[in-house]
Image (cartoon, rainbow, N blue to C red):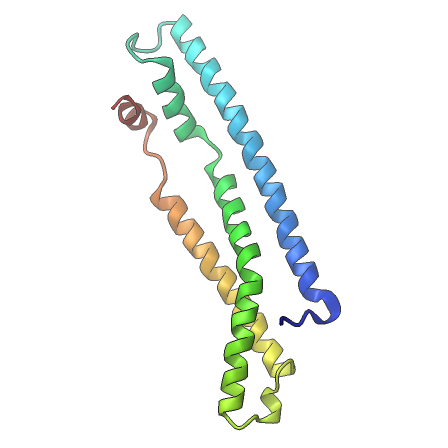
Length: 158
């Protein structure tokens, strides 16, 4: 069982959950705004003959949404949710592994469970896990970045 002494972990998880909710709401609102903007932009450009007449509305809207969507908000939200889900799991795994290492080393008192050294390594281990999640999220964000609007329009046509 996990040890949630002095409720500090509850505060961390609560703060991470609050950040996740904020970014999820911002992403949903942003995607809705971009969807409206795509329709309005298509109408505006069609009325002024600024578009090729054989581009269907659905293709234009798809390309517009892909290029102008607030992807960064969605990816931040996804990364923070991953941190939220993986933090208790990381703590549980750390507690199991560290306890086995402690037992295998004849139980030295300085490395006793829930002692200062134990908490020190857990603290920096969590920061390391969060850094890995942030790196993976940023890497995925940049790998899936949309190309130019023209290229996305060509892609959406096919």
